[in-house]
Length: 347
Image 1 (cartoon, rainbow, N blue to C red):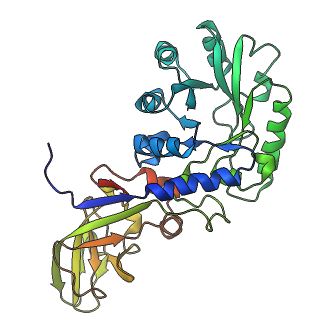
Image 2: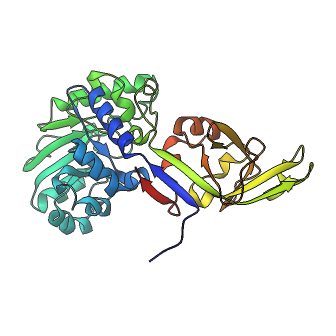
Image 3: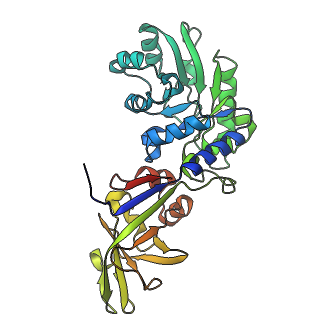
């Protein structure tokens, strides 16, 4: 039993998560929105996320690995879970026993699934991202005989941008929907949902925007933040003008400065890209990050909040879109790098 209070808190807004799913489901038109919950629901905790979205009406959950499927198979029917990274020979017995649905990505995986008994599966078609999936020339007559192809999927490479590749991939996918006898079809991720009804098909697969990310312009009006970070002040000191702060003296105080050090660092996912750029808040007052972010510690200029003392808490600015623009990190990195030392508090 760990009775120690963590000096870091990750507040997770379950109401906002569910609101985001409902909004993305509505934006999906006649399609139903599923949920990408791979990488432990982008770092937020797959079991907590899946339970909330299940209760909200979500019936399609996408993970990357079989262990991720097993981790949630007791809280949703395994047949609601799709394993995107396919199967290896060593996966087949466990996959059959678990009952989650493999997304087959190669002719070899198709043959392996057939030889192990066939039945329900999903197929990934590579429409132009050149990553996972069967290419057009690998889809020949009879390749899916004896298989129950439930969902034919493909993945958009550049849905967050206005580029010709989106339309090219759409046309590739549309041509295959006429050639393959699948029960359902799925192309759009979070950003792809915003490309319009032609991209929706039967199932959409939002991920980033479920968790508060702005995957494409136009989503700011309905996507709500899910993640809030708070950190405790470990020490407050007064530093004279000209004195350095942090590793390599990357910051020197221009005046006498009250400097606060909080328990947060790149081991917690608050990466060095925030050095000298990030912000904390006390209410609506901005508290700048100064100096270099280190493994466990971040230093703050407390000029705007002179009442702060050791043991007080500040909120760390972790707006996903703004932080991505500030640091050059992607919103996906900002989420999935969140570390394990936080006390996670759903509300």
